[in-house]
Image (cartoon, rainbow, N blue to C red; front, side, top):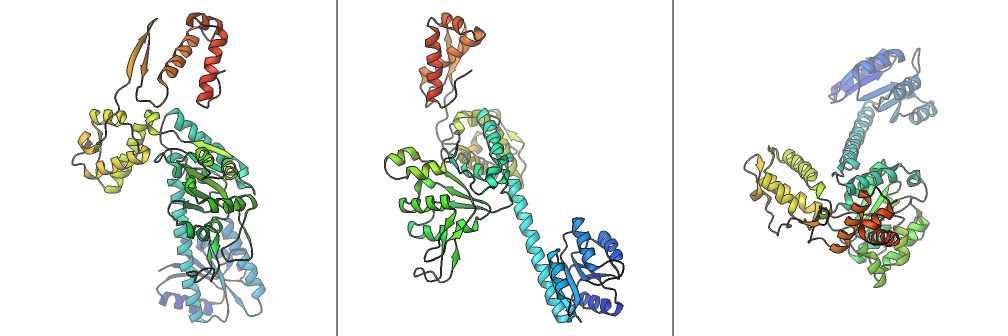
Length: 472
């Protein structure tokens, strides 16, 4: 049942239309001129307007324009006499959903009203799911307080603010990182932070589509292009037109398809399999992989030119073991999410459970953390999670060892780190000496027993190895 406002100045027609709609189960109100229609629309907030074009004091077209100017989104069906079709077309350009010619056929009226209301429900549902996806996929979903995570959020917002993303040649983004670090989450956050947020976000799992079907999936095909092509089908790049296409695990893409993808990205044109005409597409390309693409280039598995085309804006995600500060914020986030989903009460974790969470190295990164907490919340028999609920079976990370140096300097050494231990210790000592000497390079060098040039060389060499700019 819908709330319908009928705006018609002829009482008999208005009554007949209202009776027909009420008989169909709708709630109907009637207005006999434009000004009355505006007042009723404010009071009722109708789901649908049935609007005569010719009205006293104010035309139906002016009523429609006024309502749209106020932000009213209810669909309108205009009614007009024969010979006034041009006016009805003008009304549809102003936002009307459909039109009927007078005298109104009551059966046709029911059909048009049902079709319009059905379409409006689809639009509202789509808007709801789009807004929910946007809320669930924004920068706020990048949880954590580590410097790496803060920098990542800032980078996503900086990329999103770039109007280049809305242009004809938006810069491609390549996201690299270990499995489970949240590459797909970052891709969605970039899309919803930018000017293409209202457009589609299409994800392509490059490991899930068989090689022989990949070209058809990506570019589409025409009917009869191959044995199973029973009809014409649009490809994923065309479906992403005006939005973003995300190639997940692109490092595993077939070598033959890589050349075609490169051409499509550079020319913004695609040709469906079996088709003769090319189609223009406007997409922002984001890719992600956990594979070392430079090594894949050396082995001949990945094209060097495609790599550089995809890597205009590189983003490297830091594994969870190297941003321990994020473990507890992520833990709180997932506990709240799963407790709400499963309808259970979880107040927190024991101190022992918190210690285990922080000492574990999380080889599966954020994805593993999420799965562990999902299981813990689901299986918990009390409001406070303990170690037994976590079900972490792998060895926990041993605590860092504190090493005392001359002069009372103590540093923590993590012997489980993948980085060179002595190099980190040396850099830590040099930083401490610089801070102690108030960044006087000559004094710091004298404290360390080496030359100024040696201090500068070691600092620059350390930053070169780790891809960071030297300290000022």
